[in-house]
Image: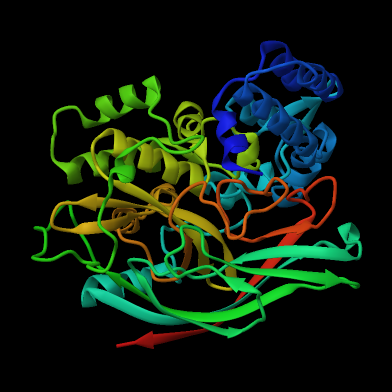
Length: 457
């Protein structure tokens, strides 16, 4: 589907359809959409309604549990949680739910959000002391040496879940490392894609078209060099030359509204003005935006972004969001405040785990492009690490794979169906050629495995 369909999500739904949707009457909401689509409509409204049908089709997959099932999921992690605590957490906005057919249904990962917070971690018997045996040594090395370079080798795959597979022609896309400020010397070690996007693609992918008679994965192995140079823009003078001289310079797009959801809404303009009051220094303003996101926004796993309206503003209004929503809020505030800002996303590599992740870049005079990771910074703040909280303003750790440098960038070649994630591409996409509908996020999976890390001089 084209960007025009996704961009149409920036406009509201007709009121009666919206009422039916949030009341949980999805069947009649779709009937009302179909009735409208039989008439002549403005083009953007037509695209909005077509896109909403797809959102409604996917919505129940995000909320599988009734109250009893939700309690069981949470108690499997924190056995002494009471019904009264559950109600209080729900009223405080920390448990996400919708209505389906007159019944409350709960978000599939709500319990995994709750156990990220120190109070729940202690009740699970985990030590909360602000230390990270994985991150702290890397951060200390970057601060001491001024730079840390590593060659990282990953094996990744994307595939349809076996219970959703039927033989046929498939198209698949896997994100791969893109040339960026911190990333270079990218090598494809194994895999047989039909097409690889250029190294400077906004959303870099490897692409296959294959006939599958039996279930299989689309796989790649690649390596790349990542180099992080230490920046402390709040306390140190700007260097004589930008830290990342090969990074493309800022453009007008780095200060503008963009796509469906990087919008300078009245609320975001007011918030930026409030946060920046009394200073014109770009570094100080950027720090205040970062500090707001990392200390006021609660980390929360989110339903698919396809199901959320006005991403940056959603984060600022609800004061919750995952890594992507937090990065989008930071980017939006920077751009409103006259600071060029960009998106980066791909993978984050932790001790024994590789997973999807998003972060931001922002541009300061003298320093050039720097990094901000509000999600990692917020986690450090929650767990009492002021040092790690400060580090992720200006820096990221080197254990990343950056594949995307613009939010809502097109993949190459475009898909025929709606993408599972129309805004980002961290895990990959698959579609079956000729199918009436695309796959949902619960029907496609992927693996990412760290094969090696080599320290470089």
